[in-house]
Length: 209
Picture 1 (cartoon, rainbow, N blue to C red):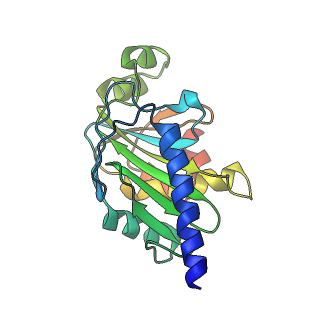
Picture 2 (tube, rainbow, N blue to C red; picture 1 turned 135 degrees about the horizontal axis):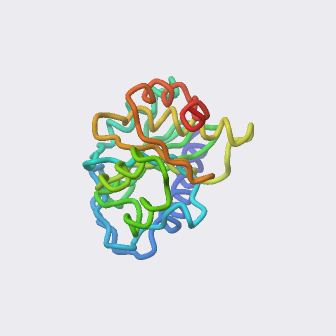
């Protein structure tokens, strides 16, 4: 059993390391761990154009997260206790604002950032037509994302995004302005009714509404 726990932790650390490498272009992200929010340099993190599979909340202000808050959120989302080892892992990474969540089905990374998501906010706003979405893009100053870490769920993309939605839904609040799905680049303005849809994993109901 002890050997199994060691192997599971090593696997998670390797996946987390690869995820951090994909997310950040440089190695200057704040260290500290234990939670908080990342404040990267401009252009330091990679976005959806770099083939990162994510659900993203655009926020009007940053959303700091503690490791314990992450564990409680994962427990609420998936109905199992989470800790630092075993089948269900939820832990802060050495880089500030980055966290890893692992279930037997798939791995996820949670990242909360005190900076605009888009490198060029004006260009991103010009690329959409809906006025409320334009306002959300222009008005956001922070973001929170749940990324796929490792292989997608064996039952397909819909189930994968459903699990990501169940987790990110635990963090929605009054600071949310928009929700984005990176697989197709769709962005919709956030409304309070989305909270329950996210927590139930009903992603298509949000982006097809």
